[in-house]
Image 1 (cartoon, rainbow, N blue to C red):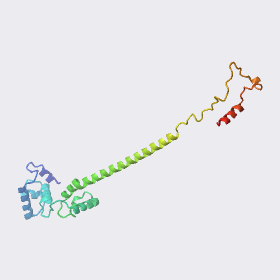
Image 2 (cartoon, rainbow, N blue to C red; image 1 turned 90 degrees about the vertical axis):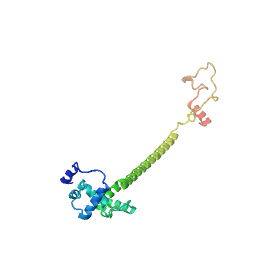
Image 3 (cartoon, helix red, strand yellow; image 1 turned 180 degrees about the horizontal axis):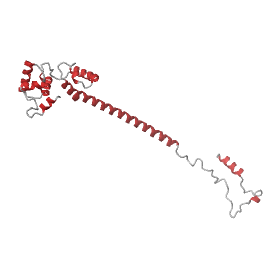
Image 4 (tube, rainbow, N blue to C red; image 1 turned 135 degrees about the vertical axis):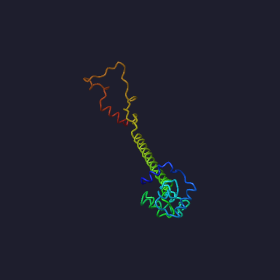
Length: 208
């Protein structure tokens, strides 16, 4: 925007807001008789209290005879996506490949329709990936819990009754009361003395 246009936009007499039908007719008739020309001069010459930029956008986006009306078709949408992937936000260049469509119309359609659907698709895809990761984590945790339970079953304490020492009750006769245990000196002559060989033989007889 040049200095003249900036100064004209700051003029208190310059009108802002929606265009009226009378303003549209003045602009259409002036361009039909004199052509487009320089937009700042055109606004003054036509008697419009509008800036040159406002007149240009109104003409290019709404009042041109070749402006295409109606919704953008699916074919046009695919072309916009293809050209945007190639050129990015160069809307004027994209508009040249869509006859009757303005760069402003294409830009608004991209931001309100196509870009919105792209973001929604990306968000849903990221959510699906997150749910897959959560499922894998749950499966790994379940496998870990199963392995831990198996290890705990293996590591259960053994039954102490299996390795309990043999009982000699009922095999050995009690010593009579006031019996004096033999000493080491008279082991050879005492028939009540039990040697290690006797205990081992008893274990063999009990099957231990």
